[in-house]
Image (cartoon, rainbow, N blue to C red; front, side):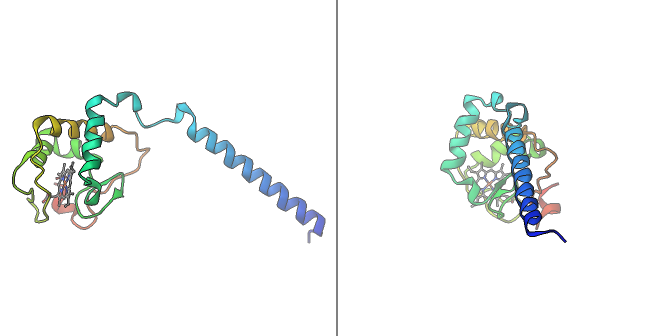
Length: 146
Ligand code: HEC
């Protein structure tokens, strides 16, 4: 049994040690050497693509790195999975894109806009995910991820 004094010292010591470990790990995580965002590859075109992405609320249906809505396929690795031409077709078509039943808005983007979105998705696809696996669509994985 610890005395009251020992218990207090144990509590304060334990708190201090875990707090210092926490601060140390935070500094380590935020250090430049740990940066996995490949920020230096961010082109003007990719930035324009990001604006298009925000303006059209793509996150309202899609996810990137699991973030967003689960109505439509995950897009983190979509360039790898589908290729640029397929993505451009989904964004430039005048008819709603729905090979698998659910509808994607017909954005009728210009070639340039579609290219900017592809550049943005390429940049996203090259982020080091540290082994995190993105799931295309938990409900329709086999159907969509062919
Ligand atoms: C209203 C919901 C909705 C919105 C908003 C939306 N999408 Fe989609 N999108 C879909 C659906 C549903 C599919 C799947 C269509 C299918 O395969 O049948 C899809 C498919 C795609 C695909 C092909 C993915 C694959 O793996 O086959 C890409 C790329 C894509 N969308 C990009 C975008 C971008 C970029 C935006 C914003 C500019 C956007 N989407 C906005 C619903 C949406």
